[in-house]
Image (tube, rainbow, N blue to C red):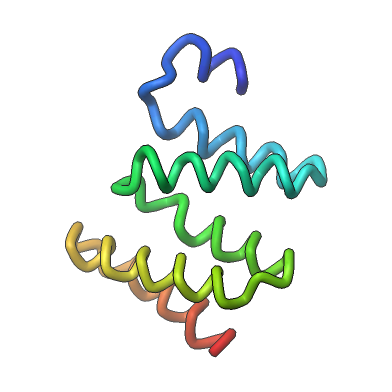
Length: 96
């Protein structure tokens, strides 16, 4: 995955995929950094919000997870993506 970022550092999917790989291998802090970078540099990349929120929950950062879910919900509404909006709302409802 890091190779893909080196080849195309402008594609947000590459950072997203790397963050998910980090989660799979138990490297949660590295995943956190990737998601944080992704949200800061590609804030319109909607898929990152759900998984970043879940990671934050797993790390016990519930207030941060709530903020991420709320930001994702607003973005999903703006992008008219009802399915993702509902998924994010469900995750938010679960921890509030």
